[in-house]
Length: 187
Image: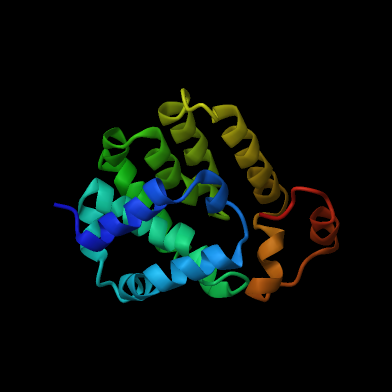
């Protein structure tokens, strides 16, 4: 049985929120997530939701909490990326446990997405493998692949996402500064 709060996260993300909202920078939407899920995020950060990893759907809820909601809760703050490493490990464990087999395409997409958010090229390689295995028939397959390729381009060039440098206190190279002047270089 899936925990009630995990189900609340899934219902909000997959039933109540349209696709456009999920990928826009919107202060009102960020505030809705803060109001509804900031306490859950804190509990998860304190490892109180670690048992959610034991089931496919609650694991997905935890991935959304750490990978998606953290970016809304802490926009323009390094806290937005603090749980990325833990999330990548959860995703890898979920893949090997066969969790993707139990999910629909929309759910699979959000389970795989943290691998593209990673600054490790090996995670990107795994994401493309999973994209081709599980999302080949997704109606937006080509759009997803193109968008991911834009992300991977930055990782291949710089071994990190230049648009995160300022937030994370990293010094940008002249090449990164030039890259950031190009359209579609920041997500």
